[in-house]
Amino acid sequence: MSDLIERSRPEPEGLDAEWTPEVQTDILREVTGPDRRPRYDLHPVRRRALVAVAAVAGLMLVAVPVMVPGWFQSTAAAVPLNSLADKTSLTTAPMWAEGQFLHVQTVSRQDDSGPDSEMPIHESLVRDDWITPDGWRWSQRVIDSSNMPGATERFIFPPLDGWMRPGYAATMPTEPHALDAFLRARALGSSSQDEAVFVAIGDMLKAEAAPPAQRSAAIRALALNPKVTVANGVDPTGRATLVVTFVDENTRPGVRQVLFLDGATGDLMGEARYHASGSYVATVTVREVVDALPDAIAKELGTEKVVNVGNTEPVSYPGPVDPTPVPSQTYTPKPISDETRNPTPSPESTTR
Image (cartoon, rainbow, N blue to C red):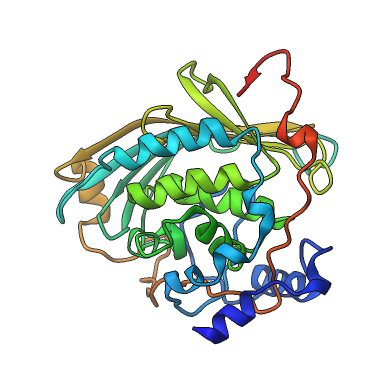
């Protein structure tokens, strides 16, 4: 335990940098390495690189409260998010037994026609997932695009890695500062640690992995993020939601990443990414527990927990990859400005 604490403790020389050169090298190696097994791609734009080998989630708890004074500065997002977290901790997460499935349908649309695009992208997707309690999922995707009009794809995906898998997510810290530090020491593949934590929490909610205690802590951890703002608003279908927005003009100018959260339960109702050349918008339209797979899915894919990603040969499943702390990575809080604490409300929304 002491070795993990020492490796995760911030050093003075690292406080001015979001990512060290070593971390950048780790990310490049993970993204470009040849050993990339098929996996369920949660993020619409990029995949997250995770460092392998399992870790015990609670090890960060001992040192966390004294590590970062900046944690205890209040942001404008704290009040609505902490209020939602209070409600979330009291809700009952969907429970389903072995042999049952959590059916989640997500409707998404991606448009990209900017000058940096090799070719314009205009694609809609209806994705249905049937998820087992341990994280296996049967997936159907109906795609409508210029080169794949009305195409249907079906897969069986093994349990996801790290915090996107129910068994792992349930072991993570339930204290928000500890969870924030836990993710900052492990999440890679983003432009900054603030963004990495935001994306990791979104992926965990999207994977339906977090039980109420961890989901509540994750929502409180969003309130610790200095680049997050919150407003009462609507999702792309017009449903009332809490709109949680991440903006970092230093690392991703002109980009807004958004999570739409149910104001009563904390469930993810959708997500979006807006940028100069286009957008990606996804909305959860169905979330229900069912007793069996649809007949067409069971007939084509079978009901056994065997990886099926469309290859002609069977795909082996070596087991999930659980992230461990990156030794060279440190939590590097930035001073929270008065504008961050009390942002000026935009004309189209009221920031709480």
